[in-house]
Picture 1 (cartoon, helix red, strand yellow):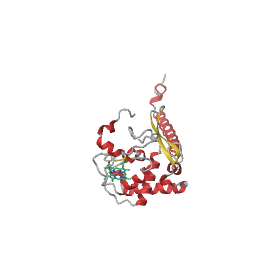
Picture 2 (picture 1 turned 60 degrees about the horizontal axis):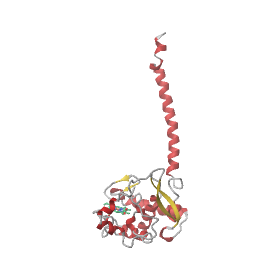
Picture 3 (picture 1 turned 30 degrees about the horizontal axis):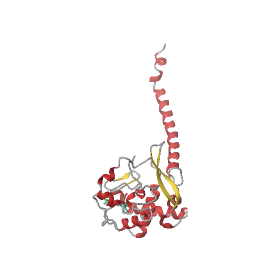
Picture 4 (picture 1 turned 135 degrees about the vertical axis):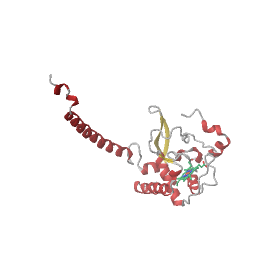
Length: 225
Ligand code: HEC
């Protein structure tokens, strides 16, 4: 047996061909993954609801036994601020809200969809935070909080959010952005988030924030997944 035959796998031409095929194959896989990702993150897809779908309906957050975490589910009609929007109006409102969060650098303190800081609560599911009180008052409480957060101890974190000079219009848009963001299927992120009990027909008369402040153990409910 000649030496060239014995060492075919060590030859330069073999590795050159292998490199070319691996590069070409990876390129095809990357193109496929790019299309797949764009599909997953586009509003109106399976994981990211269309803007109007999110704003015009209730967002439920229910435990999925198979996936073993909570997932957002579009509930019955419940328009934001009582006003049903077209897809174009909803998209404009959500992007105004998103631009507001960028202009005011909310990420300096908060996390949105995994990006940002951990000084303040994660905003990915903030819309579903029980601290906003009853579902009737939630939208208005959020607008008021965003416009004037300094004098309200909201989550009993012991930290206060500064007044960022947000106008009422910007606050409305930001609430729309937060509602839409909460409807995105984020594979259960952030973990251990305790949402509003949507099934509770009688919302607590007292704002939940006060209960939490008085009873620190309320935050660490072991019954919650
Ligand atoms: C300088 C840091 C800082 C910046 C910047 C900031 N926040 Fe906050 N935010 C906080 C802190 C601290 C809290 C918790 C306040 C409390 O619990 O009383 C908070 C709480 C909140 C909450 C309540 C969260 C929940 O789940 O109950 C929302 C909503 C919120 N901020 C939205 C925003 C938005 C929108 C922006 C940008 C426009 C923003 N914040 C910018 C510090 C900040």
